[in-house]
Amino acid sequence: MIITIDPAGTSTTALFLFENWNSWEFISFTDKNWLEQVKNLENLLKNKQPNFVAYEASNYLKNAFMNSHFTDLLKAIAGLELILAKEQIESKAISNIQVAGLESMARDGKIAGLVFKKEAGLTGRPKLVWYFKGKELSEHEKDALLVFYCWWVKISKKEWPFSD
Image 1: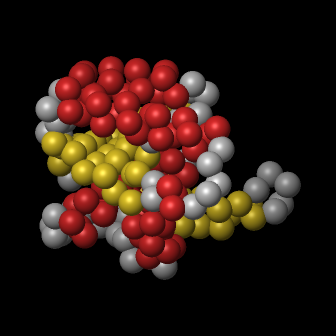
Image 2: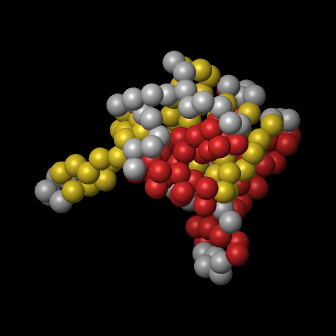
C-alpha cells in the first residue's frame, strides 16, 4: 500500500491510500491542534501499515512569512517524519512547488481521472470543484492525489493507473 499525504498543522489533513487501480480511497481528518494531527497520522499509519508514504512538504522556509499556522504545519511534518523513521516506513517528501505545478497541469485536463469544473454555487456565483473518478474532492484531497501523481509518474516513472 502507498499512502500520500497533504498534511496540516491546524486544519484538514488529507490522505490518498492506493493498493491497486481498483482499490483506493481518500481519508481526511480535521483538528486545530498539530499534536492531534500527528496522533491521527500515527494511528492511521500503524493501522494501515503502508509500504511507502509520500507527503507534501513546504519550501516556504525561504520566505519570511512565518505565522502560527505555518509553525504548526512544520511541527506536524516533523512529527510525521519521526513516526515514519520509528516505524521504518520508506518515504519521500514532495515539494509544495511540485504539487502547485501539477495543479496547473490538472486544470488543463492533463491528468486522466482528475477533473476541474466551474459550477453554479448556492448564491449563483460560480464555485470551483475538483472531481476524481466522479467523486468530489476537497482541496486537501486533491493535493494528496497530486502528491501521489508526482510520486507515481514523475519520480517513479510509472504509467498513470487511472483513466477517465
